[in-house]
Length: 206
Image (tube, rainbow, N blue to C red; front, side):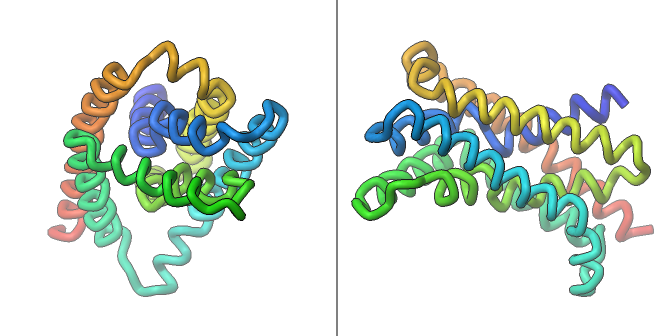
């Protein structure tokens, strides 16, 4: 169970990327008061948690209703996560997030950034939705399901802390350290993505 928890924890940490969300949130909420920033941080993580929980609990039934096998979803999800990993290693993902945040910041009518773009797609994006569905599909039983959800809850709590401490964190870490961490996490995610594809192929070829 500890191995499953650690594996799930790494997967969610890499895909949701709390340290990567922090600077984006700091930039988007720079014009808000401290109370407003706290409220938006709680709202963003709350909405993202609800989205991910829904996909975790009914995602498999949704696939079954669409006629998609779990093996096929594992392969597709693994490929998608691998592409995300490549973007992290070559810093494409960070640039895309910053561009998206800049577009939102340019719109004066947008004041509350908690739902878009923070809750979705930055926290509950395609990668995190695919990850939670894949991990839930691979781990049947109440105990293993609880472990996966516990790992997800831990990362979401860490994300909330990162958003609340976004300003001070960016001053401590700096851009260069953040870039190094992102690349290392990208390599780990690439390995996990390959494992998802291999699992899907093994089931398909039986």
